[in-house]
Amino acid sequence: MEFKVPNVMQLAFRTLNPFKFKKFRNRTSEIRNQNPYLCPPIIHYMSKKDLYESPDYYLADELLSDEHKLIRSSVRDWVKKEVSPIIEDYAQRAEFPKQLIKGLGEIGAFGPTIPVEYGGAGLDYMAYGIIMQEIERGDSGIRSAASVQGSLVMYPIYAYGSEEQKHKYLPKLATGELMGCFGLTEPDHGSDPGGMTTNFKDAGDHYILNGAKMWISNSPFADIAIVWAKDESGKIRGLIVERGMEGFTTPETHNKWSLRASATGELVFDNVKVPKENLLPNVAGLKGPLGCLNQARYGIAWGALGAAMDCYDTALRYSKERRQFGKPIAGFQLQQKKLAEMITEITKGQLLVWRLGVLKNENRATPAQISMSKRNSVITALNIAREARQILGGMGITGEYPIMRHMMNLESVITYEGTHDIHLLITGLDITGEEAFK
Ligand code: TGC
Ligand code: FAD
Image (cartoon, rainbow, N blue to C red; front, side, top):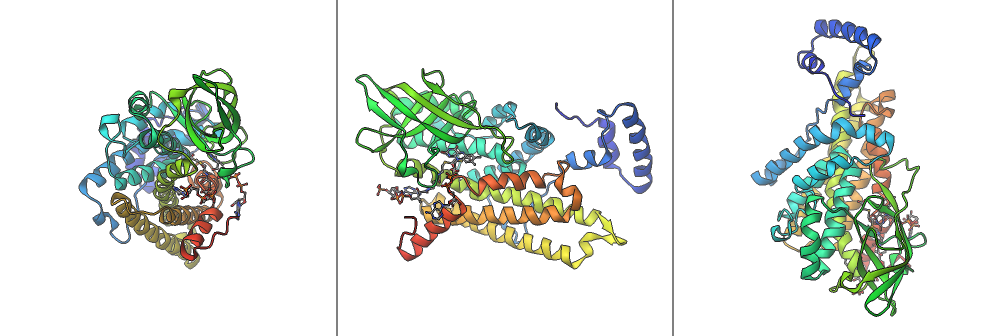
């Protein structure tokens, strides 16, 4: 059920002062008594209005071009208009808002860096990061859908696919006419995807695919899946599997407390006949899927900071408005410590991802640098969400504000695309030369 704020309410908030507020409250109580749906408690209106302003303590905006700022403001406007008003309801109902797909395509969120000739937006990596940041500011689940589509479905087709595959799939994926998912993780192989058992055999004019993938974002509604499986020699290869192929099913995973507005499921292959032209010809080995993860992890490094900034912005505004013991709680040292530490960590994170964007544009960002940023942004966001929730007191646990939703989402973000531990071990390996995974 989409929530609509009646115009009269919006007007009232624009002109809020203590006198009008009192009159307004009395009037809303009256209306609420007559029709609770039309006028739920007043706090609902206050929180549903998306007042977000991004913090920029070190004037990092000066590091962005006018084009980057324009992209940011249009994506931000889109999120405020299309995502913020509905996302809480969809998260509560554990449903992906499919009506956003078309708009995500229109704002360039699907394959921002894919060249225009294949239907992508042809933007640079800074723009890609900014788009992910603005979308995840709205919700990590919506950013997930975009990350998977752009970095984990379009990117492998673009980087490892044949010209026919690129022309067949990329333009439709860029608009959202086709949606995709990425199958790497298996029930018994998560952090260690090299141990996968999903496999395919040569059966003359096609392959026969068997196995199962688990925890797959977008799987329940995806039209195609990029599936990583071992060939008869044990080499990992990528296959494009299409919905409707006999023996291919995508059961949905239920009962998630996290990423509730993102659809997650399995991919099950029972003797699926895959045409030979659906093999990605230009990559073999674990570096295929890991190369895609570099793209997606880069987007998360920016995206998670978006969630952090939303939590900070919400908590800062609330702390100035909420009064206890006769003054705003922003005036208490304990709350200032929380807020000051939040803005410090956000500022550090902003500078880190900006520099990573420069390196990525120059094709100099290493996978280990991307790991460091993904890990740093996600733990920063999770810590900020936890502290911000406390600043809101009891209100912080409700869906009236975005913080608890962000916090629960981030529990997935810290696990997928490589866990917090795995990224630390990647940094450890990079600086010592000693592998500590095995
Ligand atoms: P290892 O022996 O180190 O490497 C095997 C081959 O891969 C190469 N390689 C990479 N290539 C490109 N990018 C990277 N980041 C790479 N890391 C390694 C490596 O050079 C080697 O190449 P070659 O030519 O010598 O064969 O592999 P390992 O088995 O020891 O594993 C290393 C480890 C643990 C770091 C890796 O497996 C890993 O990253 N594990 C985490 C798994 C993971 O991140 N899964 C994510 C699944 S997808 C997902 O979560 C999507 S969520 C999407 C959403 O909703 O937003
Ligand atoms: P495990 O690998 O079993 O890890 C369990 C714990 O052990 C973790 O704390 C981990 O850090 C630790 N650990 C593991 N190995 C080591 C080690 N060597 N040293 C120290 N500690 C270690 N996958 C996809 O392929 N496609 C998707 O679209 C996708 N979407 C997802 C969406 C959601 C909501 C979630 C939750 C997951 C998704 N994943 C997806 C899977 C995700 O990538 C895996 O969950 C993740 O890689 C971790 O694997 P695991 O859950 O099996 O945990």
